Image 1 (tube, helix red, strand yellow):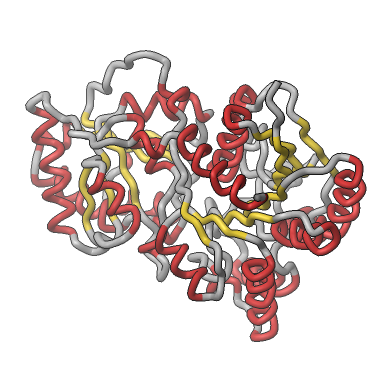
Image 2: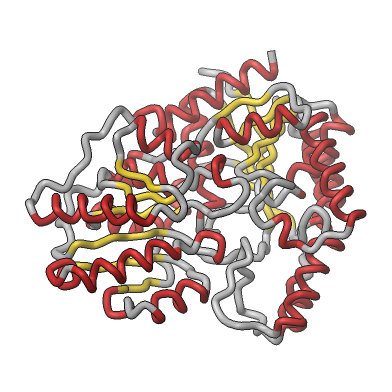
Amino acid sequence: MKEFKKALIITYYWPPSGGSGVQRWLKFTKYLRDFNWEPVIYTPENPEIPVEDSSLLTDIPEGITVLKKRIWEPYSFYKQFLGQKGEDKIQTGFLTEKRKPKRKEKISVWIRGNLFIPDARKFWIAPSVKYLITYLKKNPVDIIISTGPPHSMHLIAKGLKKKLNIPWLADFRDPWTNIDFYEDLKLTRWADKKHKKQEQSVIKEADSLIVVGSTLKNEYQNLGAKNVSVITNGYDQADYMDGDVCLDKKFSIMHAGTITYSRNPKEFWLVLSELVTEHQDFAEDLEIKLIGKIDMSVNENIARLGLDKFVVKTNYLSHKEATREQKKSHVLFLPINNTHNAKGIITGKLFEYLAAGRPVLAIGPVDGDAAEIINDTKAGMISGFGDNNRLKNNILALYHDYKNGRLQINAGDISKFSRKNLTEELVKLLNGSIN
């Protein structure tokens, strides 16, 4: 009988939590046993989660240990302050679905950035360290893994490292102080310094780091991190095994996931409004499918440009249903956040788009990490921010192929992005960290 090594994985997001934050470590966990590693999950019992997706529960390996401890988060006060109901969901990334009192919103953002450092889960750090020290003394593991955001998870792991000296791997799905909305937090000089000090303590004290792209790797190396490896997000082939689907009759352009203000592709809406005015057949064939939460600025742009009649909005679909819609759509739309760190942004949905096998239409840095993946895999087309001419030509080229019945991609090899192969890469790092 094979002897399994054990990894404690500290993650805020875990099923039935839905959305992008849960996918990475749920899928790693799904395949770790194939490589002689046994995962032990530590996660909140009562987290504040934007969406629920019970379909993801089926990906949890049978019989694994999932440790849960209640967490206190100050969101009830936040909701009361803004006049929200208790059941209202807290949105991440400064997504605004409807107008809020401006003065109260500014105050709440200031409190969030300056008092809850690194985030609103800070009150879970000390009790978690205490609880896990007791657990680990009776149930030893070979390595501790923390994944953020929220970056409080790293501080829990840091506390365990200090007390028990167990090897620690810190996973950054997104940057900490270089995340796109960091400047929107209205930080005082003191708070900015504290965020950066905590970030420094994590990257210096963790035995190794993993990040999702090469740009983020360079950023952390420049901050002083030593052992940094890239393991991208990916796709799970099992999610795309439900047989063939019929393509939409209309020329459907689909986006899956949240569209925040910084991700709102204003040039996309403008170019589409021009195309439906200039080409009657394009107007008759067009359908825009938006699946997920969208910022109110998106709705405003769509309405102002007269695109409402072309848009089909779906607030949320389970992961399984969303992958099916990807396969049915003619074009998969990928807008990158138009922010200072845009080159390093690789949204998790890109890899699922690759697995769906439909052409990708992207807007973002043509020399960024996402563009490199799209070009290497021959998955679609990308235009730079504000390059409306190239965007229009890309859309027309895709539409021309649709009209002629040959809209497809000449896909390159995407197997290295499969969740199982990525887990194998992770295991190589884990084995190296404990030897």
